[in-house]
Length: 397
Image (cartoon, rainbow, N blue to C red; front, side, top):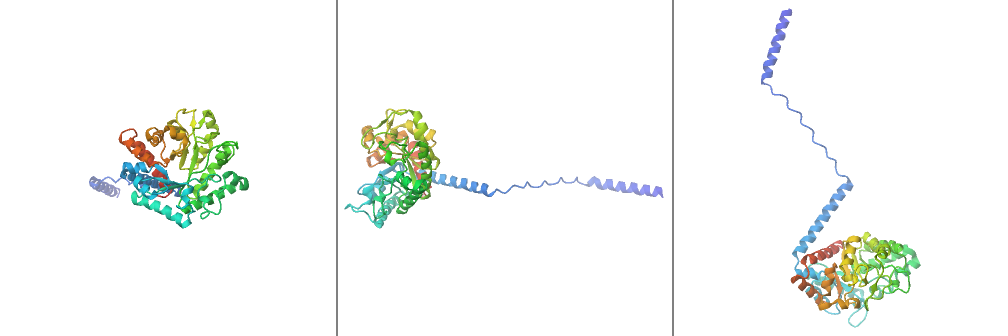
């Protein structure tokens, strides 16, 4: 019996060996696919934000590439509204912006425009831009409050003139000032105004200073705290703010009538005057306006508005990436620099993105400067790109 079982076991072993001869080795196990974590809501929102930024950037590049030189140059001019033929000027020169003064809130006979008439005036300007380049205008107005107001002087638009920041601060504190500022700018926005040439960032605590009544009247740090919050309030109202007058007016004389020379040391600007501008830039202000003061610590030859050194400070030291505006080039302080009618060319060479003036011949001078190589088209493109980006941020394009 033992021998039988031994033979049986041997036979079974032999059969197993024969079967194994044709068998394939077992397949290796297939590894499981790695399980990727689903993006969190915050990560998904960030991906969407970056994709939207890329889309908007490409949209600007496509638009810029489609524009002629004349169209790009025109976008760099924030023109004081002509007393007549404004719509024709918008279309002929492809203007980027129109700046309103008190007379622009009146009709030809000098009477205040009704709200409907004012709305029709702005609509006609925007229609001219739309029919020309399809790029809406920036509509600007000086609405600092107090001595510098335009729209609120018109009783058909506002019940009373907008008070100065100092006055609002004295009566309602910072909270009341910010509430009134937001309400006022919301009203401006409803009227069709998109850019308010305010707030004044200049530090002045001396009532004898030219700029004092237009300033906040407080020290540099208090002014900086105010600027950061007022820029946010204006943005919430849908209005773009303009920080002015870089690099800081100090106790200088009025540059509307003549040249003002500022001999303060650079360290003083770092410790005081820069603080409100840095705060406003940090709060997202899209525009900075440069003064006509000759500030000798960096440039004793040119007003800041025409000085490459001061524009470099604004870009590199303060990190401003938005639109740099000149103060009005029709002011007395820069008339001496208009050699050969090329002051706008000088302004763009210095680093400005938009020119505030009333002289339409400056547009032709800029185009000619590009054509003869005095001014590079790359400079024009960079400035125009910033202007278009500002319009995009205001949902104009």
